[in-house]
Image (cartoon, rainbow, N blue to C red):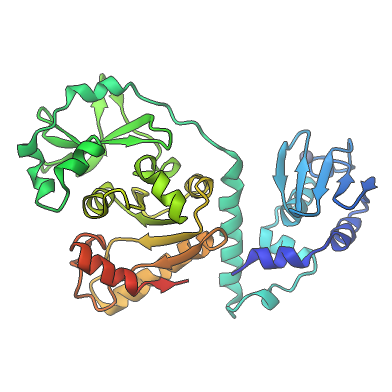
Length: 351
Ligand SMILES: [Zn+2]
């Protein structure tokens, strides 16, 4: 699925034709830009502050909208002003484009869903949210206790790695402490791996009645440590949990290109973080949440959907234990060590 190809097909002559259907024409044009009245937020035009940049194929409204959008989003905005809520997919058809020419899929509904979900993700792009940073001193109430942390050591996380990532232990709550940092090394949350068997295994720490959490969609665990290597190879591997990043560090040291999303969803904010580091290739390394071949097939469909959205930005591949004999149920691809990981990596599925 390639929305870029569709956009490439539309030249500025077509843009003018599409907008002329609404009775509007550019007030100025040169080789780089078209200037329109602000038809994005005024039903009958407005000041001449809507610029179309021919190179990037994006409109920028310099007044009320104060944002950039493409022709399909503009059509959506204009329809909305006229009382019609249309999807991006419907906007594309309004531009007179036959989407079937651009997709391998023959399933009309799935093309429609993909396009609409991609745009709802893209729409979050302008909201760069600054996360609150916590006082680093909070961490001093926890201890580095080799004995208590040996449970993770036995799973393949070295003590050096734990020190590097500031992993500690809380003897009062009996939990392992996992500090989360943003790209600039600000402490943004502290998660605990609890060993008392009541309730969730992983949850945010409460300190002085304050829940030390952050919206996980806004950050990538491990990026602050691995950003230089990731930037140098322009590649990142995305795991679900922090422990996988720590295991990668224990095996590969400074040649660790992993991060964790703390879940399966990937947000525009996370994509932006990878874009900042000029990442070109992304490998999805989700847990083996499948026992049978059929379950694997179902998961594959689910993951391919996420991968397709990412494909607008990166080359994407996904890790699977195809023979279902390398990993145990719910294992992360790194859980059985270096050799198994590298075997699974070799067999990855390119989307
Ligand atoms: Zn506007």
